[in-house]
Image 1 (cartoon, rainbow, N blue to C red):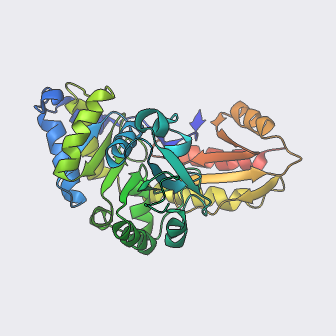
Image 2: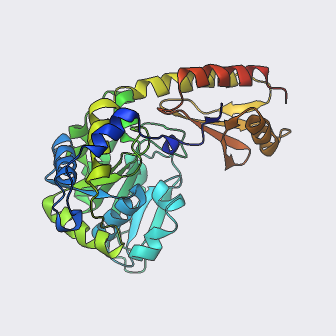
Image 3: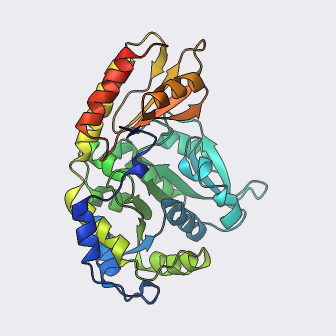
Length: 341
């Protein structure tokens, strides 16, 4: 038995999802003639209270499209130093949009309204980049699946309005955040100008993200997606997985969260652990003490049939997900309990 806890992106479609996928009605989405893609886009736009939505091959492309629309070359966006758009999108902010990042030293990938205010460049000071966009990631990947306080997000929105800034949500794991904090899609739709949501992580789809916003914004996004090579033909087969997941796989995220908490409690008692980040959702980041080698730990795990990933600085990450079942969980708990290091 191989237990893959590298990421929730390793999930595979279940048989019911595959059946739903294969029975879907498709067309050419580049011509906007795929009825299943159109259905998914309308479904998500309605959920978040926005006018329109657009299906993308990846969350990175959706985020980069939003940044491209909200900025001009030479502008600057504000994000946390842990942000996915800065750390894990291949330098796309500068490559695609000619934009720099003002990095906030926040807490677990989250920052405050006051920190945003202190990061905005004076608009009449032409020596510094023009601040035009604030990007938020919820939940935070490098922050260990932490969830933003909805009230702080509202405060930042008010600052964005006051200073004429656009506001984008990288909602790669927004479903996990909503389940944990008991918030609703419409709350985020009311706050952000644009939202990217992922279907291929906790919801278990094979591929796909969706960008949500106003009709004007999405019309611009269609052109940018084309330039980036993101137009797909009979994409309804993939979109059907998204529809199935939205109807069946959101509430079950609680199971992933509970498993992560159980692992947190076990690891926190181990002598070789320096720190375990507080677990809120399905991501657990822990750090070994300096006299232990994370590479040795990873090798021992792999020999036991467990795949983990390093985050650098002797930190490792565990991500629970739909395909990490109860049998695997018991086996992993046993492995950690008996581990000699």
